[in-house]
Image: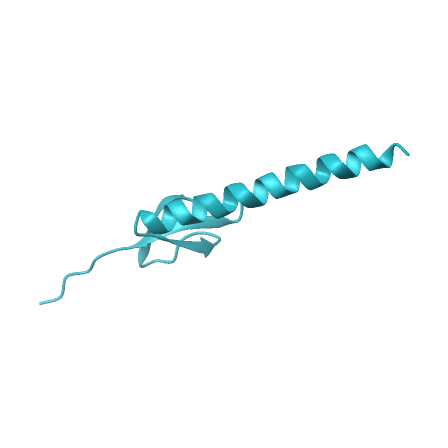
Length: 65
């Protein structure tokens, strides 16, 4: 059955992509950021990428007196 090798390759590829996204989100949190779906909100700046659809954002410090 020729579809079996193709299915195996798809499973390996998708699991590798999932694993990479998990490591990227962990790296983002270590840098003081958080993963956000789409572009960062207005009170945060982009510091990296968590995955294809998630940005790594860090809150902007606002000083109030």
